[in-house]
Image (cartoon, rainbow, N blue to C red; front, side):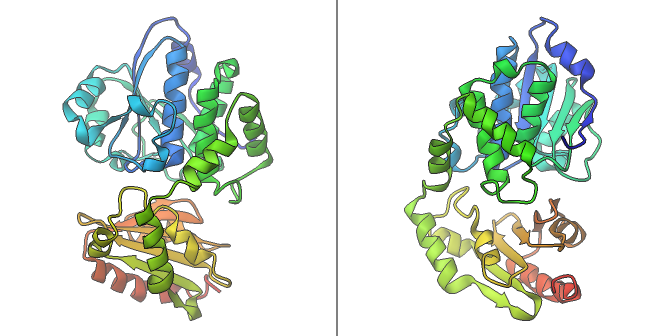
Length: 340
């Protein structure tokens, strides 16, 4: 088992004290499968202990995750600000899952910071910012969902992993490992997956919902990108894909519809780095994927206010799409040696 930074012994006792606690569970903006999966798994687990928990996401999330158990109980902060702020203010505990910096939850960050509740960080990203009272994290874990499984196991409650919890945890591990192909996938990860299937995780159904449920607009956008928008920079073994807000509007792109597009660049033979730059109107968002030793997270942190994992990271820019692309083109030649 990989080393886990664990300060939760007192927390585990508190959760088993018999006192019904009011708990808020939140995760990063535009939640992915790991963020939502870990949040909903923790929601069902905490409720099974007799606590009153609520999942609050800062923003909406992809439609292909709406099938998940507990989805109908999730509150979206942007749509229910007053109710969410009241819940945060009244909470005894706030679980912060799949993020380690309050900037990642947008407007919800300040209320969470100022809340009287103790904060719990469960996360697998590098460089955590100290805002928490309890911490259960490892950057070597495949996903936050893997850590949630281990947290429940540490608490002596593996028998409480229902088929609903199993579905949620399976989803997060599956998506954050790229269907178990990324380097963070270990033998321990597979043992956890086997146990989740034994506990009722519907693996075939989950794969179909996540990967085989596309809107027509997403498929048309995919074709458009593959035919018109992939630019190869051969001397740098890099692919650059960019999308304007006008292109997003033309194809009626919704939250989650561009998920995974950056990976198509990386699938080209000989390519070491794929970059997707999208104008999201308020900010320009950037996704980085790499093979081998090129550290996307360090590149994103240094140049584009970002971070993440070594081979998968994100960033952003407050300038225009054109200026962001220009900046990337000027910087990336400096990394030619690392990309060879």
